[in-house]
Length: 218
Image 1 (tube, rainbow, N blue to C red):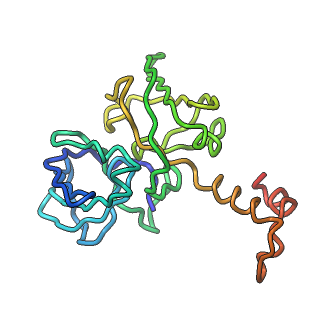
Image 2 (tube, rainbow, N blue to C red):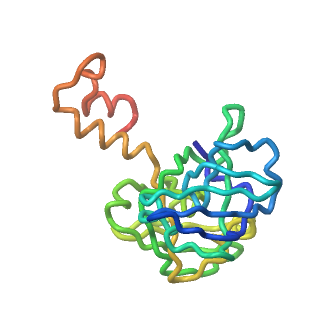
């Protein structure tokens, strides 16, 4: 589990094909003190497992599914990537709960400056916007952002100077593809609602539309 608050950037050193997957070697811009083999590291928002560690350099294996469903499938040496290590239970959650399981890929279609902010519009399939709400949270390349405007096939976020300086979102141009993870709460609610009329076992039998509304989910 992650928060979408990027720890720092890294540089992709190499991409080694492994059947339909790949092994990525990444040099972090910050020390990985305390990181162990087997720990989770989000790379552009995709949760991956560290399989080798040497100073600031680490390697991760990328499965065929992740290659197909994220922008890592087109990754190349020299790319800059956002990095975040897994949330510890003692940490403050400054962003929102991010699983590191990318839902799909979006494309930046507009970028403009407003005062000290950069407004970025991202085109996405409506299968993703169904889980978004105005002023809700979304992870773009692993960065926790707030949705300012929402359309059936796109959304707009505002990038403050701090975020622009410390993440790749600040330098990506129109036409760039980005990983998108929607807020998990919407997916859980849809799952519950879809099962509301189906036979269930145990205490879950009390979950229906009235229960979700009473509990503040609707």
